[in-house]
Length: 207
Image (cartoon, rainbow, N blue to C red; front, side, top):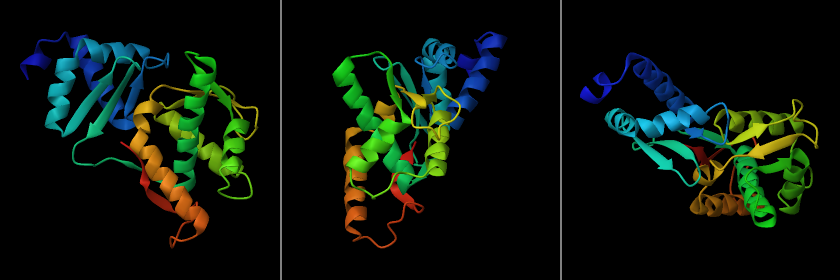
């Protein structure tokens, strides 16, 4: 309590607001101009955040190399359960992020919706592209969690541009890639009962 009481009133107000935002969107990144100041606020008051979030059962993970703050619940509460196609799109974004970083060594990874569809078809998951409604809804969901930024309003168009934030490295780790890849392989083979893109996939979660 003393840590909080020693803060200026305006910092207390900001602390409450940022805490609520963290619990809502899980990721804060300095790469996103709209959350950049919040990222640095958390760094300045790291001890206060860690103390109070620990009481609530959360762990604050800060990766200064990526410029990302992630909130993780120790009790595995408050996870976002993703449907199969949502998990696949998230995995494809992670793969495209790695590929673009290796090819171009850019600070910002810029792709378009057509890149996602092309990668999806190359994986031979289904014979047709992801439908526009699923694509649009999934991209809006991932934008909410600060994993991507959508630069063009109509994400149903293949040339709609997307920035993939470094936070995706913490959202989809190496072990997660293998789990989702295994899930897709089972889905392709049709060996798992209920493997349907509209059903929930326990392997696909956002902390």
